[in-house]
Image (cartoon, rainbow, N blue to C red; front, side, top):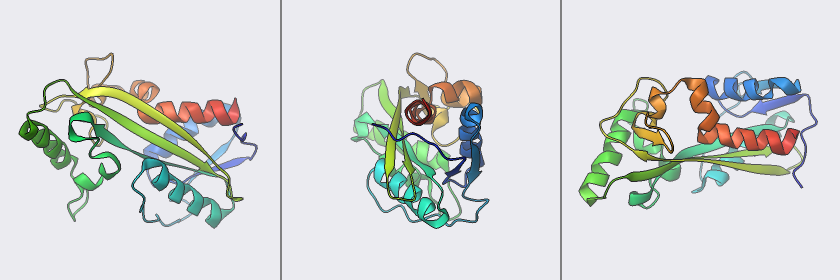
Length: 203
């Protein structure tokens, strides 16, 4: 049985303003105050696990312990079938340059590896998001969202972030980067995981 959320305040263990706004928007009907890790000056713990749930749990538990508040964290990425599920938990690492993240470089790497393998199209892939809600007493709940689709090249669209310009979600003919942000949120991996969280903990 999923533990229900009965507190007044939820800490979202992220320094990403977009993620914070998305969760706050979805929880508005429940009268929950949503605060972000950045506003509390919480450090970002090292993500040392090799699974999405492991990394999300590290961040959520660290934030809950540090503040005494229930904390929600996510870990997300893209898995490409022809690459054996890569980059997976290393999705952001593929974009690291030493001078910040370059997702054009990361997308180019994904494309070049698919071409080098001679992988047949469609290049099926999934965006995946795992949410962990951790309470200060150590209990946690896990929610997973998956958005299936395929990759295209050249990239398309100016909106979104990360690998969005090369990802066409199932049932659509535009990339995530060509979609309106709120339209994308309804079907995205993160949107689906947050919907499960709301249904499980507030339903």
